[in-house]
Length: 343
Image (cartoon, rainbow, N blue to C red; front, side, top):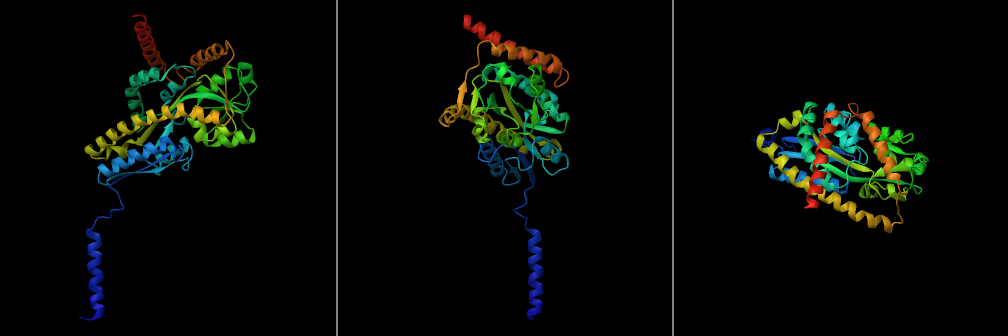
């Protein structure tokens, strides 16, 4: 056989072989997921553990590719990219996805919860409602996430409502509850997306922000906001959401795998987040952050503002029905605790 004919035959055989062998680099089901959670944070690490387990147990057929640290933009930018197919899911904050499912904002009402036990009890009762609400918008709720109890943090000490009124106070962009709450207190909020907060603190555009103790470390806000009012201002949380149509294409066994792995790893993430918030207190104190105590009677003034906010936002920022469910669950829990305490 002439050398030229041999090479043609060989190239033809290689081409046939290449077509007959599946490409290992192309998973059957790829989900591109984005988040504003910084790479290396507990949120990003647990997501990676979840993704790794799903990929291994599906033999590489279900793969999650993550884009952490806000490189795909803020929550609303991520959602827009999901709508055009550039992304297939994301880790969203309550404020960032609230414009899609307004009821998801309800647990962010300031001064609503007293403990994580209350949070867990109320959340358990609301999960079916959130599942349905997101499904109606073409989203699959895979897991709840948590930032934790948040505190007011500022570049100067704040111990009274009058102090707070003198501040240039941030509110999360697209969060009508926090913005309305601040207005009821006589404060004009400055709305910004989370990625813009640190720069705005550095330039002096704002001087008061709201975050969890761990969150202010991973986002580096504590480098400017050196004073923390040592009373929880509210509760912050989020969700891992996938495009529902894409998720529905998974074979039943893989859909079950995703849910089971999410239940495992995101339950651990809640534990991680709460532990990290506890440990963050000492880290902040070691970095010269000062915890201040609100003056007597000041919290009651803030709670009055909360009640006014609920009246203004009911059936606007969230439905009356979901708020009533929250309060029913909360009252059930508190009554049960009080009853148990009297036995």
